[in-house]
Length: 164
Image (cartoon, rainbow, N blue to C red; front, top):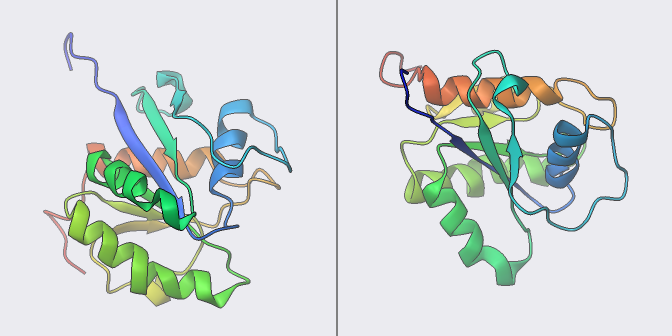
């Protein structure tokens, strides 16, 4: 990329209480904050945050019904979507297929999706899902990796090459 600076736009979405804000906060600060603000402003992750050396702007989203027009705009303008859910709450898993996947496909069908927990068997037939990764901001497990995979989903997309 000679002389061109690329910034990848990452949207972090999911149902209420699934850890969207704590994931971003932990990635930015390197420590878990059990009491984050309701929604963070867009956060810039430096180019050296991942091995690809590409800067990212990560946008947190609200779960409030009155904020859904803003969430739609974020989904439409993002390069990649990270969907958070709570593996102990089945409705958040169901909403990946029944809500988030269909919404993303309608608003931004070319954006790859990265899921922030291991649910491969449940979503293996959703072609825009690049990877499922078990992430915990509290335990600081795979926090950086989820954004690494999100970035790789944009830089090295599988979809044109591989259809599950």
